[in-house]
Image (cartoon, rainbow, N blue to C red; front, side, top):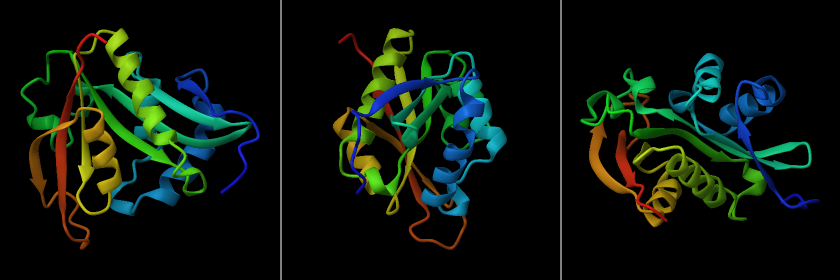
Amino acid sequence: MPAISTAIQYERLNAANWGHWRSQLLRLETQTYEPSRQDTPETLEKIICHEKGVSLAAINGVQLAGFCLGAPLEAFSHIRGPAEDSLRGSATVLYAADTLVDDEYRGQGIGRELKAHQIDAARSEGFEQVSGRNRAGLADAMWRLNSSLGARAVHIIEKDYQDGIEPDLCIYYRIALSAP
């Protein structure tokens, strides 16, 4: 585990700093996720640069320790879960597309801080819900984290990844954002 030379800083990701963090974001995405869960550079850029997106980076000095990405649910109509969501079209749901922490920084609460900052920002920007997906088996820690922040399963999506890794299930969830 690297020494954290300064306190982790949390910074909003957007079109202005996408180019600066791009290579570290892509490295973490490839290093952390199996191929069936990796987003393309173009998809990551669209999420981060979305004008109504809520994406954040956890930064230790000049190193990206983790990130969480989100944009309005309507931007994800091509993905199972958001595609069937009855709230799609209401412009009230932030879809949490991606949250990860570099292996070297895990266990320090960075993922929780990223999610908490994202939820607070979504609430302050007028979203009423945060939704997302967690792959059963491979993302159980994320499901526990999301559950601890108020996530409730909406439904289970079967055979979404079709990559030969079992179980091929993901949990589609929502977190209701009430006033703090």
